[in-house]
Length: 303
Image 1 (spheres, rainbow, N blue to C red):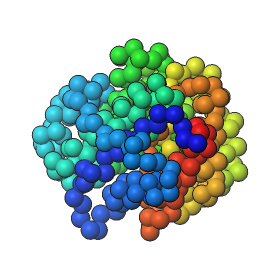
Image 2 (image 1 turned 60 degrees about the vertical axis):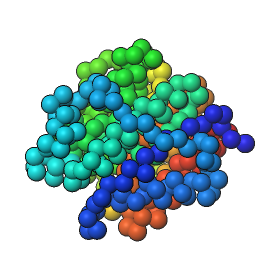
Image 3 (image 1 turned 30 degrees about the horizontal axis):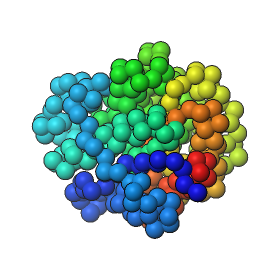
């Protein structure tokens, strides 16, 4: 049995031309969509091409000068290195589609309880600069648009990527209508953290049991806030095999994590919008399996 009216947004048809030696596994997006179709976790009718976010939407979270300089290819070499991708018109479309997919998924989730974006989770982008493969912050843009359009009163972000969402915190800190729960590896990137509403800092090498204990012990903070929607950054880079992780979670541990977050939202009837987040195993197979596990959890909870 399938969840009702599921729509999942993709943007892998906008391909970023990267050098062969580049460390970001850009091909993972297309491979994941193919795997989800092959395993029957999604079908073609449930997959929707992500719309491009408008400049107006981007400006809800980002500085106008920075936004226009990126869109027009005017970032400095230093700024481009900080982002981690060479500028191209392909990159502009990919970035706008990633944010557009996040916006579309959140709005669909408000009507249908669950949705997702096979990209996004770009939580290192700050208001006027990008970092760590993040140009625009899809989570911040989405939270602010939902609030400004009065589609919701309160937004919660559950960020379980292994890297702290410094951009989320920098853009959204001080907004009384946003709560950010962030669990991340303390010693990992970014090396200058920005405090979230509530941070759970993990030591290197944390395994499944300790990770899940801390998550279960702190998630009540999100629901005590009373959100109208949860934006879930479900990065799979806490996986033991991840090249950029430093934690030791198994595939089973990540599946239990996702199952728990989704179940807690569903039993409270809180809409959930899923962002893909990080994953950098080498070879990429372990990352893909973890991403697929997230969608297995989705089907188990919402079917």
